[in-house]
Length: 214
Image 1: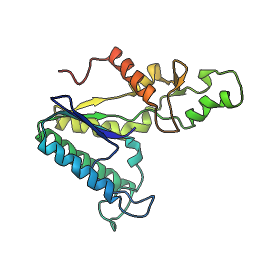
Image 2: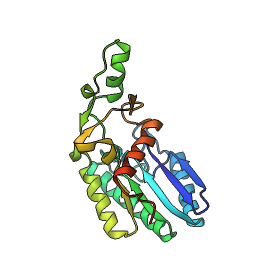
Image 3: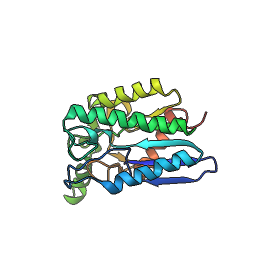
Image 4: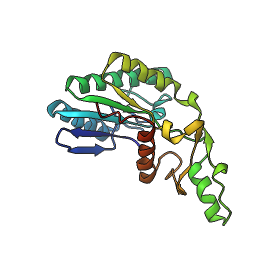
């Protein structure tokens, strides 16, 4: 999933499926102005309000490739995209910490090179016996090396930055599960269900201290 969650001292939270400052017109061949304006709105809220922390969660690997631009006629390449996302993330974290909030980055979930959603439901559609081991997949840490290094770099710069890696709960011992209690983890090829999100959070807290509690 992707989004920003704002939590205030009064327990008021807001959620929006939005991104940090970036333009991407690869799909519709135009700038996503509405998304950009919405992100600006939330960053203005961060400046004006006194939140305890701000959580940024994305499918970070979705920024790979040559799709990230700042202006319509910008040059495009993977190298430029990575530089732009690093600059945008740095800008966002600076804004968050300057406001007095604690920034939290959630890493991407592990994704299969196949389709774990289809794999799970195949036994239902074809009336076959379900064997979860046929759908579980190995964690490929190489997929997020660039993001891992970027987050580590940001954490050295912003000492209050908290980093949460959901793969700790999703892929114990390096094997990523596609079901929890017989219920599918994925709702499509790249997003997990609310049920999975809730239970992965519980599993994470069983293995780690609550990162949002000092």
